[in-house]
Length: 545
View (cartoon, rainbow, N blue to C red):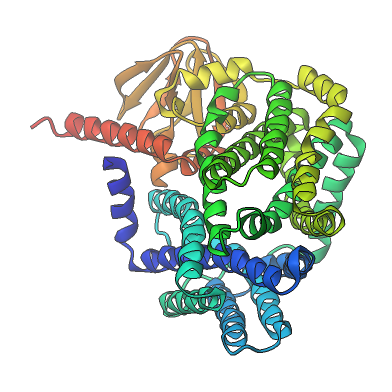
């Protein structure tokens, strides 16, 4: 609670950041709420086939707009792009609300939803530029990103509940009306802001080359081909589930449209709860985890076709969401292990690029299966996707898992350092892969007081003397780290670190360090305590009174 209050206080000091974070919360709620609501509306007017086609119609323009949106956010005032995205979404959502509530032809409602969905692609790239432009130091940036992570997780579940309650009390058109009002609030929040304009981004050629490198790496590498393909298959299942939640709520449970929202909430909650088990994956073989989670997902989803008990279906879909989360974490971690370190970012970029395509294919698959065999056949068919992939490619998956490099020594070292002790498993392993082994003879300087901080050091062997103004204040050995103050506070080094004996250490670049601390609230809390304690000790040394 204390760490959470500290993060809220840090962000609250900046009125501009409060506005951006609040607007983003409204955006996340509306993004997920209108997606669920449009599927409910389309299903009511044309069944699963029409719902799938409308999902596809929303996804494809968004996929096309996404790279353009990233370029706009890189080349133009970021607040203008962010506000423009909110305005476009509000107009499309409001248009959909008017069309539905006035009883106009469904085409007009669909057109508004497609327009709003395409505009969503403007928001996240602009948000990624606006936040650093408005922060004054690394601590503020770290706190803001941590708060945004919390808000996104909570807002997704709030969206499902919002849809459920609104459909139970009113009708689907009011979901869009409420969303339009929320987006209007986001526009009001961000419009007065002013942020530094970034430098011009890379040209189109370099972006294309970046994408081409990702395709080339995946094409040449059987492990990358399989694992990226498995992530794409997972996206197909997720896209199909968006449609099937509506089918289950209305046809199988006969519970009404509101239950489409409740089922989404149960699915999301299961992902949050079971996804936390990813910490157990550190340093372990992941092939069995991928196989078991894929089979579990399939079995639980198939089981929903055999019952009409609402409580049982909620429980089953929570397990589906949890097993899907475990499958994704394990597959991404194994992909990170199996691909050359210098190509990881590009391969993951390609995997993200296939996300929209997978969701679109899944929407069509669900619609086609419902049309061909009915609701229960559709559930069983989608349930078979990931288990089938695991059965067909099980041997290759096992070989990849056995040959993938696991940085056991580096993981053990990071685990011994209090700062990283609570870091989630996949993040800890990714951080271990980013470490660079360095050696220093006695007398060598690892970092100098007053210099710019660019790296964090984890001591694996030997003794490091820490001094301030030429006076020794500490000696550090294995299982200790140094250099975090300058990285977290964005200032100069506060002390000099010198190898007293031959020293073996692992260096971590500034970006990797901040990304790890930035992305996990308990780790941020630990880092904040460590920095505060060290600064208080420095103050007492300078002013003993």
